[in-house]
Image 1 (cartoon, rainbow, N blue to C red):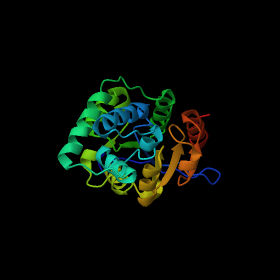
Image 2: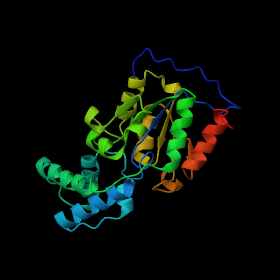
Image 3: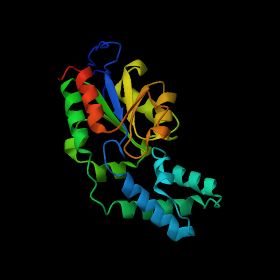
Length: 235
């Protein structure tokens, strides 16, 4: 988004902030895709080295780039980390499995995006996925809401480093105090907080015990939508 974007001045309501810009994670927040990511990695690593992973092994690392998350898993499980070439081959196999699926977005996310668009709130997407995966997962009717899209292709350090969210803020031309991140995993929450911005979390893949670093935790998208409705006087 260009620096010329007019971001409305929004006051706080009853001590709760109405944000001028919102940055959304993609997998598990916009797209209902995490089961497909998890199953892809579980199959690839089972075939590669017999490693049996749980869905939680993948979910708790969501937000990290695919390669970083798998290196982290190898190290945690005491498995020798393969060469960069082999890691890239494993990622390609996983991507091929993932791209066999027709991924849908969470129904209530459309309501959230429509509401914030109506209220002239600037929005961006900050994901640990490749741009290739964004193009596979999201259709134009969803992508049109995002004035900035940050993927792992755009950064040198992924979540939990603050760089992804700092990049998203810079592309929106927004100040830290005006920005909210919406996440579903601890690595993404940590990235947002390290970037100096508020963060809400939704329990789409992990329960609240993993999300305690967030400023607010919501049980589902509908609860977050209701919150935004109250904050932005939509109802």
